[in-house]
Image (cartoon, rainbow, N blue to C red):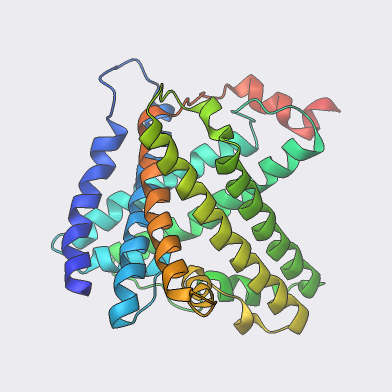
Length: 295
């Protein structure tokens, strides 16, 4: 099964180039191309995570973002594809920083909006770590050390007031997951997409966002429990969240629903790569959003 995933990952990697070049217009800024490449890279990663989730239910193995990158590495020219995905993820980091720090999506100045922007900043940090992991594997350095949620929990707990920091990170995961799910349920994502009346794509986007949100909430709960017990080993990844779902009543069905939902989330990202409104922030906008600029 893993060989099948490795073979199919090359097709997903081609989508990184194709999706970012969705529209023929040549008037886009370089930053906009960077953001669209970022959405494409994240979409590819989650399509691979979903494939791993489905096949791991038969043959074992982990279904998380780093395992997805490892699957890319196993195919022909794997290091090249992994490097391209890493570059795409850096583009996504740049876009997340524009959304959070420069307020590229023009959120108002309410508490809710600041919380959303804080979650976007956390997303930038997360995908920076994933991009570094991709480059390390692509260059043959290996990741080294603890990674993922357990590594993050261990780092947080080693800091002053680490237990509370870890708890805050866990609550951030829960909040981010809830916001993601609500974004799908309320179809708030449509304000940034130019999909027209494409109902099938809208349904896929809703399904993907809700599934991703549910998984993130579970990951956040694991993180909070790790903080409560002061045990980084209790923090859980996407794979652990899926394992938890499988242990619920009707778990096999729920597991498949969520796994397919992660694939839908991957497709949602490819849709964003093609149709999302991307505003390139100006230096004056960045300065106006920084607290120091108001002193």
